[in-house]
Image 1 (cartoon, rainbow, N blue to C red):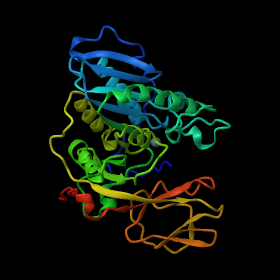
Image 2 (cartoon, rainbow, N blue to C red):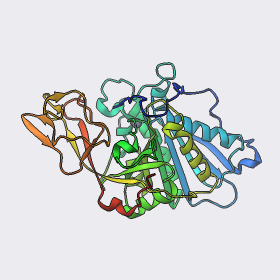
Image 3 (tube, helix red, strand yellow):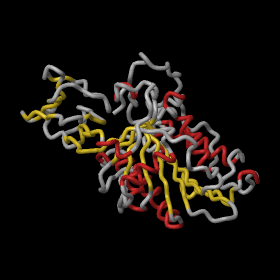
Image 4 (cartoon, protein in one colour):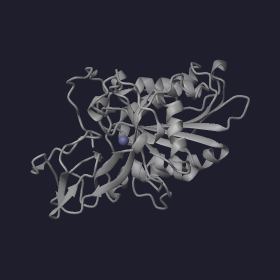
Length: 375
Ligand SMILES: [Zn+2]
């Protein structure tokens, strides 16, 4: 779901929608790369899937950066394209092997490059959503998203086993990141940082949190820890299948790329990592959330409730506290909030059988991570 926020109380965003492709992204296998790039090999393993390896010492760590799993979420596409261009121009001196992936390319091309979340395809159910297609390859793919997931998984199967350590950042813009002051009412200094969905995979929670703290806390305002399990998202697949440190990063309002969305800041962070600098200079605190459960729409009469208990078509906003205890109703049964629970991805319009909201709660003691200072 894509929630638009008013610009009230926040920096005015540039009305700039990135279009893909900008015609410059390198499609060919490059043989004449500048020596300043320190690239030993640059291979397009499949359409829009680039494996770039450094010279000399073989790297033990692979950084996977993907964008455009949803075709209208341009932040990740812009980041992948910019990294590719900087690598081939020799602007980045590569010290970390990387796999750079464009996700749903056909959905990104749709609407004259403005993109759509997923192509409308018959016979595919909700598997037209590429980010629900990862895990086991489709033996008989029925639509582009399934074929594309197979292609990407095939590349990973070839590349990933060559590395001891894999980090995977899948960049999205699935919801408008709220102001931190709306989420944590005593804090006004961090306004528009990224929210990350982290898939613990084989790693203990404290290691995952430490990974964010040391390497991404200049970018993230909050981390939502998913419980161990299998998930059909790309990040979930990377964690479960390859033991990767894997997360989905949510870069603010869909389609926008400016400072407010933290897209340029994330690009700079990833650029430093490709140059070999994984640890950030000044780690900051962030909020730690846990994902508790999904609320499945089981009845057509599902509705969210307002503060007076009346049906409303406006669901609670992502991460933001709502005062009422009973916040939804279906099949004559009220759905109650416990303690400090809040919602993510609340959307009353999904079909019956699909997720209508995801219940999250702040983790006690913040998972041991220091909160950022307020001033
Ligand atoms: Zn998305």
